[in-house]
Length: 200
Image (tube, rainbow, N blue to C red; front, side, top):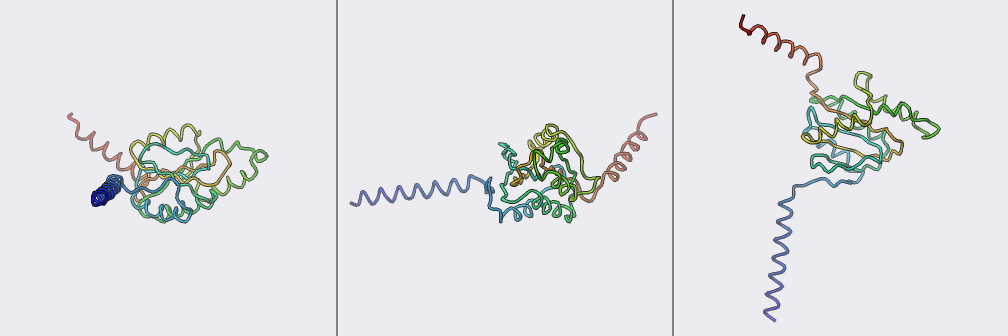
């Protein structure tokens, strides 16, 4: 009897150690599919950590899950306009980042008869941004940008319940307190300084 009790104690101890090891070895990660009530907290948690070259994508429901460890995918049980409105506002009120927005060029050619509601959805997407922020690009090309960024920088995908194709909105984050014009001035000053230092 004592032998059986001792064996049971050993088995329990081994199991406890194994669970402790796996919990320490695996970093805490958000599940690929989080409850709808959690996604806003995830956005608020990630946004302060993100900076220029990170991406946040609000996608339709057929968007794929990536194998890259830095790409986080959350399934959100809400429609695309509601999720996009929240994310766009969160970025707009942040002081450290701004968004350059890409939408699929194919979206302009989706017919209302084939996908009822696409006309209104296009309007709702455009309403979240100024014209200066939004660029249209073929889906394959913007996906190439995201694929390349995902090799080095973190990306957050929020998969919505939208079942209209080419409605994903890709937001590449840039520095919020340095605009494109400011960057150009800095680069011009560097170039001018370099030319002045050239031996005559």
